[in-house]
Every structure is written in structure tokens, then in C-alpha cells.
Image 1 (cartoon, rainbow, N blue to C red):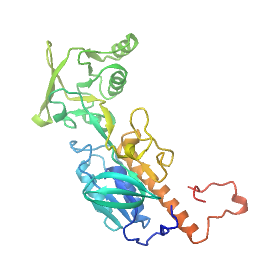
Image 2 (cartoon, rainbow, N blue to C red):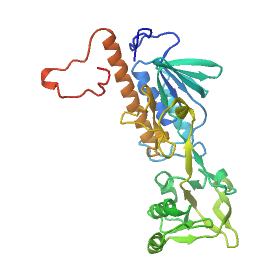
Image 3 (cartoon, rainbow, N blue to C red):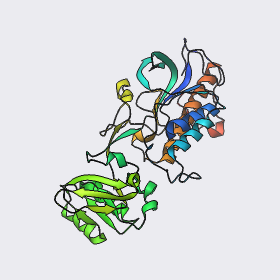
Image 4 (cartoon, helix red, strand yellow):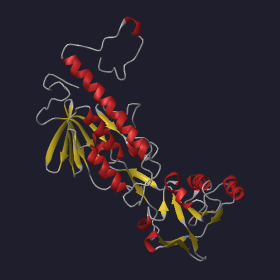
Length: 338
């Protein structure tokens, strides 16, 4: 983490023009990483590129002590938590990234910012089906996750939109919140005979007609209404679907980070990408898409980063984390720099 032309990363010391860590993205993962790093006396730049992915949701659920909090309120509280620490928040996005020796330069606006360590927390984008009215109701009558929004609609008439294995699995899952579930295949079920029999056995109805549009819902203070081509409409309390997704930023790939077959950034057990010094956290790695898990990934990555910076600083002063003879087989939290 340090070289002949790079000052040692000693916690609490400010090196002009050099951040200890630059975090791209201010969702739960990025905010959590920034908090842990700030409390570790690191100089951090956090880039807040805009509203969260779930901004259209009225309330988030399943977060310990904060069940039902709105995404806006959660983010505001998280930003307020950063105020005592050396964390600078910029309402801007990273436009370009390049490696310079052992550091990274990130273009923010018209200026370049240099950092020892780079953390991507840019999430994913949901690619919704082109059904008229569906996008406007995303988070308002149309949902992704039954763990997040199933309880509010338990026992009521529900629909699952999609086809094939993913829709089959989601329909069986949503069935745990209500026995009144209809699968909307929008013209092509793509179900195997075994999958169709599964749905029949648990009482999930299947509608194969093409979907014309979605209307109603909380936006109109009415039930969600699904209209079909050549068939009567269906009124439900909510629709669930598992949309296709793409990465929230092209920068990890442009920098050379390895991606998996679905375009997600691959990381090791420390949240580090294939490029040393570059970390990725949260939804963009293919991790389970829950706020609490994104925040946990951010804290874990921050701890790994800070430990490495501590090791580098200790080494720069001619010392090391030497083990006692009885502990020779033990492993430090991160001993890569020893």
C-alpha cells in the first residue's frame, strides 16, 4: 500500500491531494463502508451519485430496529452518522478511473481525485419488462422481493409476472404469503410439464394471455389491475416479479475487474476484485439483495482495507505483526502485507 514515492498510510495524518479510500456509491453498502473507515481515522471521499435504487418504495422492511423506514429517511440518517468523521460526501458520480502506480485516479466532474484504495458500491439497475404502466408502479403495487413486501399483502390476491424457472420459483415462494396467487406468463409460459404440475398442486393459477398494461395500485388508491389481450382483466393487491438486472456502473469493467457470466463483479472473501486495491460491495457482486447484507459487506470490506493500511504503516516504521511462538500457526485478520 506504499512505495518510495507514496507516503505511508498512517491513520489520522492528512496527505494533501491523496484520499485513503474513495467510495463510489452511497447506498447502504457504500455508506456502511464510509462509516467504518471514518471511525478508523481514514480520510474518505464518498461519491453520492443520486437517489437509491429503491427510491420509489414507500417503506423498506426487514432491517433490524428500522422496519418500515423510508429509503430517504434511512439514507439521511446514514449521512448524518458520517458527520463526526473525516468523510467528505460529494453529490457527484465517478466519470472515469485509471490506475497510477499504486494509486487510483478518479475523475469527478472536471477534476481528478487520487486515492490509495478504491471501493465500488454502485449497485444494479432493474431492467423491467416493457409493459405499459408497470415501471410507474415499481415499488408502488409492483415489487421485487416478498421478504421485503410480502407481509403487507399477506393472504390477499397476488400475481407473479414472468415465465420459465425463475417465475415458477417465485410463484411457489410468494405462495407462502398467500394461497391466492396467479402466475402471469404474458404469452409464453416456458414451463416444463413438471413445473406446471407443481403450480397446479399448490393452487397457483396460470394466465398465459399477453399482458396489455398494468393500472391502479397505490398511485390511484385502487387495486392493481392487469389487463390482457383477448381476456378479462385481473385485479390483485400486488404483483411480484424478478427483473433482469445490469451493473450500475461500467467503470469496474473498464478498469479491468473480472466479471462473471451475468456481468457482476467477482470478488473474493474479502470483497476484493481481481485487481488488488479495488473492492466491490453490495448488489453489484451478485450478493443477496437486502439492505442489511449490503451494509454488512461494506463494513467487512472497510475492516479489511483498514487492516491492510495498518500493516503497511507498521512496516513503513520498521515494525511488523510478529507472532509469539505458540501462535505461529494462527492467521491475522489479513496478513497479506506481512
